[in-house]
Length: 151
Image (cartoon, rainbow, N blue to C red):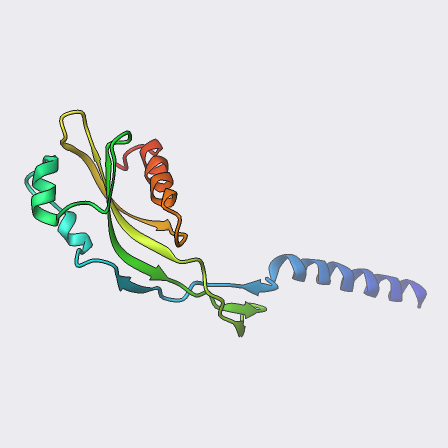
């Protein structure tokens, strides 16, 4: 009788350990983001079709003056949308218990220029924005510059 109790206890322990590994305690999937326009520009405004490498003057003529231009990096940034997200916290992956806000983000069009002021690459990025921190966009532009071009 005593051996049967030990094996039951051992089986329950193994089952409990496997349950802790397999079954998540909490899950937090993101909810759909809300986008608030910061300017009248849209991501579609930055597709240049036939002119794959437009000049800086062509871009300024089409979409206007950039919000930020970093001459040392040769990158122009245009603010598009402010993005706010929430995450749904689920207990045991099923029961909703909270919906905290994520950090505010900013959707930005970044344009990298070559030595002849021709656009090398244009990309729409979502960056972390901290209110009142002007170096945030510079940091995001510098990080973007270090990443290789997407194929």
